[in-house]
Length: 275
Image (cartoon, rainbow, N blue to C red):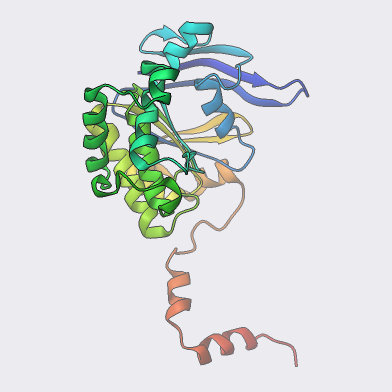
C-alpha cells in the first residue's frame, strides 16, 4: 500500500507544484493520474520515487517512510518501486534479455551485471516475464530493432524484474498508435492485478484511462480536485480538472467525418464560406 500524507513541493523559484496531497493506493489497485500540463502529475511521481524531494509531507510504502531515508536505505526503498517510462529508456545496443535483466541491477551489483553473471533464477524469471508480455521469441534482438510497442513491453518486463511493490508509469502510450496503446494499458493493468501491485499511471488520454483503470485522480494547479471512479468523470468534473470545454461532443464525430465522401467534406468546408 502506498500512502501520501500532506505531500507538498515548492521549488526554489517559489512555484508551488504540489499542495497538501493526501492519497492512499492499496495493493492491486491501478489509478490514472490526469490533469492539464503543469498540474503536478510528473512532480508527484518524482516525489514518490525521490527523484525530487518533497518540501513537506510523508510518503509511505507498506508503512515504511521513504521520504526520510538516505544512502543504502534509499537504494533499498527504490528496489520496491518499478518505473515504466514514456521514452522506454532501453539500452538499445543491448538485447531484449539484457535490458530485462537490468531490472536486477539493485540486487546483483555492478560487476556481476557488467559481466552478465546473473543467477539462473533471474534468467528464468526474465524468460517468464518475456513470455507474459509476448516477447519470448525476441529475447536476443537488439533494443534498436524493436517497434515502439515492443520497447514498451520490454520496459514493463524490466520493471517487474525488480519484484516491486509499486509501479510508477509515466505516459506509457504517448508515442503509440491507438491499438497498441490499448494493448499496453491492458497489459499493465492485468499484471498489476495479478501481482497485487499498487500503480500510478500518469496519462493524458482520459478515454483510455476510463477503459482500463480502477480509479482516477485529477490534479489541477498541484491540488487533487477529483478522486473517484472512472465512470464518475462527468462533463462538470472534467471542466473542474481541465477548464471549460464542450465535453458533450460525441467522440465518434471524427469517425463520421472520416466516413464522409470527399465531395461531402468539400461541401461542409464551403457551405459557410464567403463569396
